[in-house]
Image (cartoon, rainbow, N blue to C red; front, side, top):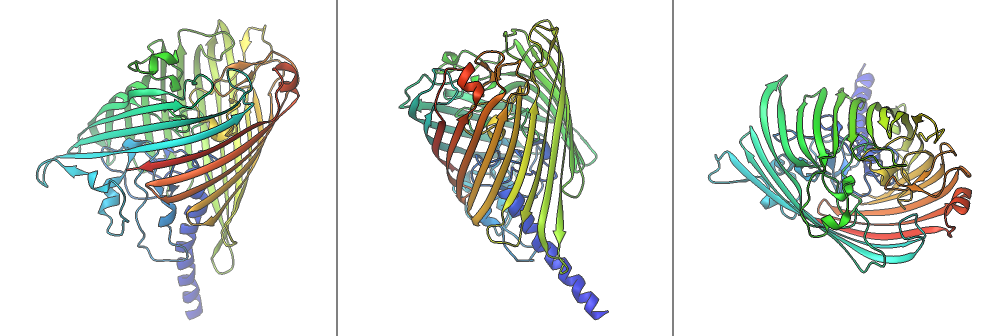
Length: 547
């Protein structure tokens, strides 16, 4: 009996340690897995080199409750905060910086006595007046620089060998009025220099308003408030296959409109009606955003309902309905009036040895959606499906994770028929899924991919990913990263293969540096249906400072 009791205690202590290891392994380079209270807005591409890789300084982990007003947020924990092999329940707090700055959680971070000092922390949660004042103000931002070298990409202007620099500054002010209202403002200045080619729509946005909204609490139900938001806002949902701020771009997507959201411990509900605003959201022309003022494109309406069902463990289910209505249809582009019905399932399972120690972790995620509606007077019938299976070894050096991904985005079977089968990826984080060299979008695409993640040190993450790309149907176009058709109809389905290598160093939540090198070996389609080019390569070094 005494021996059984000792074993039970050992299992409990091992489980606590295993939970930390699980967070470290599944959250470090694996795409972010938001905490139970924030999954609707998770930057959590399950097999990525990049859904998390390009968000500086953070590993996701389940953490404290969100500050009020509760918004869509990503709860993350800094890599240097994890305590290995320590069953103590006292841990440093989660990383307060989130993919959406208006979801930052400095309130809970600063209240933790074990929190490490961060640059700019004294500017967070500042009372305006005495300590009992209902007004608190937070001020912060980000500086980011990226040097790029690229050769032979599928981009406007044809194949070229070029170097250029991208610079971005974000600055925000967040005013809370007790627990019933909020005013948030965030500005952006994004520029490009030393470039040989004209800038693309995601390279430049000078001195503009990125986020500016008001939140008002409407009610409290089931122990959680319901909020109404009006104004300019970024959006991020689920795995970001369909809705993402696209942080990799020098600009970031934003929208303007209305949103209602109500989040309990078990269900998150969001409903929104918006118009896209800047060029990163598809609004054109780029010259309008150089030094001009951003304006919403009222000819395009993007609305939807997004729900997430959570339990006490890692399992979650997303269900969503999205409607994109574009009154200026573009030939050979998947737009028009499209309704998207979809869902996502995500879970993970631990494998323990006879000593109750977690030695391995399996993770699985699948998502799919069906589109219907009208596009250029044709009936729409399209969709996508993806699945990821991963396995992490928690007790071996570098704690490697090997994962495999399959992605399918439908293409048009008959360009002259009455039905359009080309899937519209809406507003995705394509950079995380279809190769970081950014040659392709997710319509008319098969992608088979393998990824290996490793952590040689607590602050260092390594990622390697290999992709094999084909057109889903030979009768449709190949589509570039902006969703524009490339080349001619017909031809081979073979697009090519890509290899991505990435290294990330997270000094702390304030400072992150990463570098990546990619090769894209073009297949028969590019050699015969597009002006031929040699192997494409891309190298970048990116440095980010947050405050």
